[in-house]
Image (cartoon, rainbow, N blue to C red; front, side):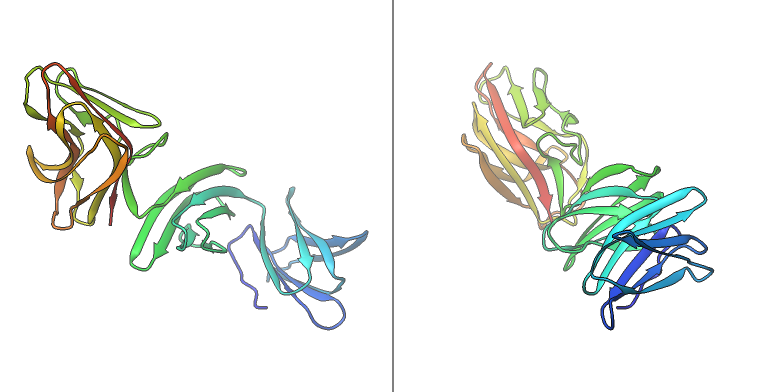
Length: 296
């Protein structure tokens, strides 16, 4: 198996079978002490200026690889059976990544690039140094990236990638803050496990925008507005897309929680998104949504 040299602080370990016992090649930072041990047997070498040491004749089983330098120690177990590679580092922080299943996922600081071992949609990525790490998920022409700042050894943080722009999802920060809405007097909005908009109008039959995002959203890259929502009270309740105060796209909202979509593929530039309906005087319309998102 071919080894790979990474940045300082990392060790790539490669195990190759053949002959009597296995051969373990350790690529480490230069001039550190490298030790392998198993069942009371220990072998020690210095990585020298090349950073590469080779241990031959290792019996099948679990060997403990340890690197030490200037009071720093890193240790990891390696199972010597067939070809094998792993990373051990003096510095280790974890980025817990959620990404669309079936996609490839990478994490890079511009010098070192790590790749997810599968396309399952979750990856506990261990990074070997502090810095700004860019996490990227790709599937065909779809991609999403987010930057994560790592500052301390042992740090653990989480990031989620998606090919959708979420305007609301339960119990999580949205790309547009759920509280940032424009609404008539006496209307309210709350957002926790669900987004709830309560709209009140004192005039019978008036159609109004019950609530809409304050933030203008560039829809150029998106084809579909999708929401799981329902409405009670009033009539002709809709999920709407606005250009200024004009409705440019919409779909009806029923009284049962249902996923609805609006085709926005013909729209480009800045728009706002919200709810609208016809009021009965002094009676509220209540809109409830468990998810609102834009799809590419």
